[in-house]
Image (cartoon, rainbow, N blue to C red):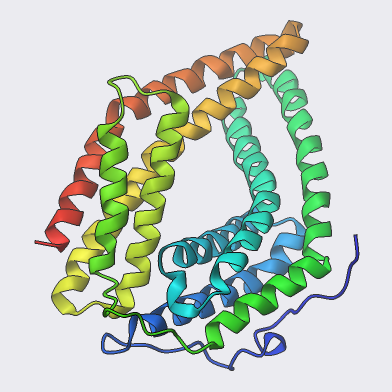
Amino acid sequence: MTTESPPRTPGELGLPELPIEVGPADPAGHHVRAKLDREIRALLAREPGTRSGAAEDLHQMRVALRRMRSVLKLSGKLVGDGAEPVRAELGWLGQSLGEVRDHDVLIGHLREVIAGFEVRDQPAGRRLVSRFVTRRAAAKRRLTRALSSARYSTLLHEVSLLTRSPAEVPAEPHDLIAGLAKPHRKLAKAVRALPADPPDDALHALRIHGKKLRYAAELAQTSAKKKQAAKLKKLLKATKDFQTVLGDHQDAVIAAERMRTILESADGPMGFVAGRIAERELARRAEARATWRASWAAVDTAARALHA
């Protein structure tokens, strides 16, 4: 893979010294550009820590990337035809970040669980964790190559261009607050389509719908008037809680599945520990399934209040 030294600062991308400022009276396109400007700065700020192996920096870098993808999906037309190709390239980078992040979440959780086990079971638990640490290291090497590639450097420049391109003026005025109705409808439709006992992947898809609504609400914050801002704050809290519940569910599903793979190839103390962890994860999964609908009800109430 061809490598080069990618930009390290906003100035190297041609961004102004200070982030773009917008207010409620500014056109929607300006808010989109300002949001992209803030998130590309956040991504750059977290890159050094991500390269060095800091889990929280990697997490926040991934969050910034996801926010940019969500903004471009929902409102990319306001910054021109280049939005969709950039969104696709952000997806490429997101895969590399996500692979390492998934291992970080799993390893951190397993270490926490194993720390509560009896002393005699902890050596086997540490050997179990070491398997995932090795896999994480391989994923991190792939991520480092991606961050050192010409493709990554080009992507950063393309995002920066979107922050500077004159916004296209749609035929009808674009209201970012009113625009929240669309992701809310999609989420509500997905909830209604679920059976009483949804498959795990259906709840994971639901979490993604909820995340899109949350990121759209974040974008709309800078365009909100005072009364709208208070309602948006409630929606943001509700969507965050919704993501937390379904995120716990997905983490438990993944952890239990990983323990099943361990059980297929390990016996003795390690197999015993893997079985104990799998049992705990299935209980955590059940707990999330018992509470997610209440979290959804709070999201639905807050979203409806915003448009009342």
